[in-house]
Image (cartoon, rainbow, N blue to C red; front, top):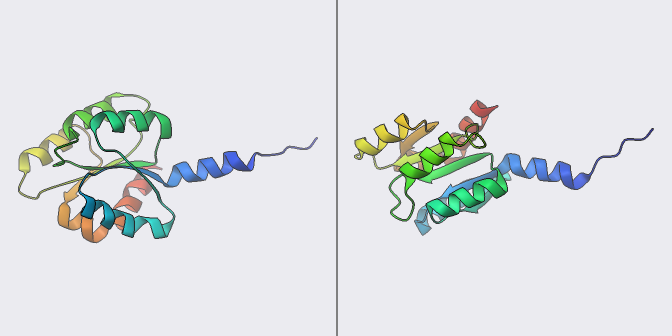
Length: 139
């Protein structure tokens, strides 16, 4: 008996382990994230709104979500509620960043179960390290 595997299935599984859903509308910041992650084999899927995140989560089942808590086009608080309350997504880690001065947002993100929240400066300086840390913690 010969067992064959579908190479597309294996590739799809590998791709999903490296697919990140990015809820960031700031063009310059998104470019920094791309620069930090694309050369290391990560695939980025951009989400522009809370509804876009919900739709793409269902379709892609990404390895992690990166979200700008201060993005005006994305209701990050509602997005976190959705991600952490929906059983399909609770195991997917969320890396968020926010202004260091926005203590209320930091506290709200933590209370909603964000896996990690950092300042914009730290996210900019350590994007790849932060992503790899949350992915390692999710295993």
